[in-house]
Length: 219
Ligand SMILES: [Mg+2]
Ligand SMILES: [Zn+2]
Figure 1 (cartoon, rainbow, N blue to C red):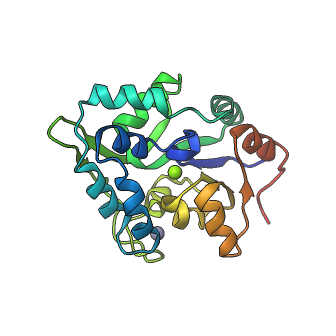
Figure 2: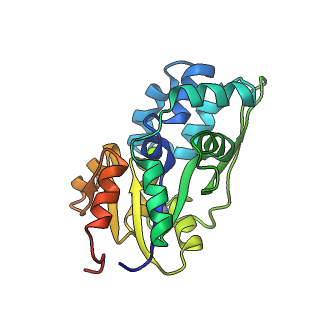
């Protein structure tokens, strides 16, 4: 198989549970995400606005955030083995997240995967309230009207075939640029509704086995 760029979402993809939800539920206003999510799905607020609204209520030190994430997030089965497999085969695996670098890197380091490249936003946590630091995603995406992961993908691509692995709203637009998409949860429902092809997955053993049995992504 040709060399691949395996673009992998973090929350709800590498992790079993979304770390943003965990942090807000633990340190922010309980139930706030459930209240915001329908407005997000309906397109009444952007993902960035929803996140800003949520994290304004989060009061915790960086260590407190790290501890609860490590306790609650959970690593999806087969991910470390998938990383090792990609490295053996010469594929690049990069984490593209709409979450926060310090949280993601702490979790990956805890799982022995601290060497992975992470492209994400950042949050500065403090007892006075969290401040979100948005990464530069270039201009508004012409496809979705937001500053989306599509920009990050384009910037990090070396022209390899693109495999996208994701689960959520922040993956919708970027996944549409991939040669092969593995999707679960909201992303799977969204792609199915749009009549777009994807491979369903619930763990990374399935992802690796599918890639191993695929001679070429070229249609
Ligand atoms: Mg996700
Ligand atoms: Zn977009």
